[in-house]
Image (cartoon, rainbow, N blue to C red):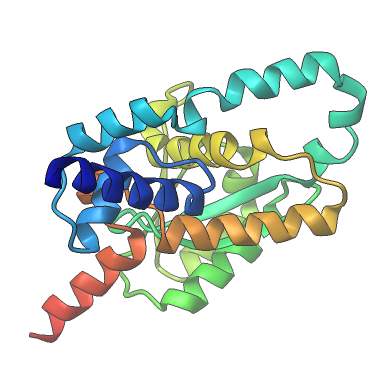
Length: 230
């Protein structure tokens, strides 16, 4: 019947998007991608078909799997992982675009400054910029404070012991851990750096965000550029 054929076509499209997202996207994100491709489908239909197909976003189980792996293979997983993970990522609040990131073995003021310099050069913002962080010593260091002031940027800090004040960054790192870091065993620092590069590209260009009405950061910025040009 037409209905059965329609469902089978949707299954194929859902499977393709699910696989392309590396099993990360759930029903809402897959539906958003399908709609952006001109396919009329509801979130509930996608959710029903995914349930029938046995497809579940890896986000729901990634942390548990990682913790199980840590308990089972503790010595193997602790080789270079902790000293090689990314320390700083700068995100634009408007589009949730990751503007700049650097990877370092030490979470230092120099690393923060270097990351910020990349972001500032990339965006070349006006004088109304606000730089918000937690109260880490690297952000409160003299080298960082002097640099921020020299650019006439307002420096903003979360309240002590209130992670919600920096919830956008907390959310980003939670997503990165569940969608990439918890799922992968890195064989070398080079392998790790390559995976981070690929994840940031995926995050910026292919991953819809609920807060952006299921647009990607790239789509959000392109939409703004079009409106500004009118």
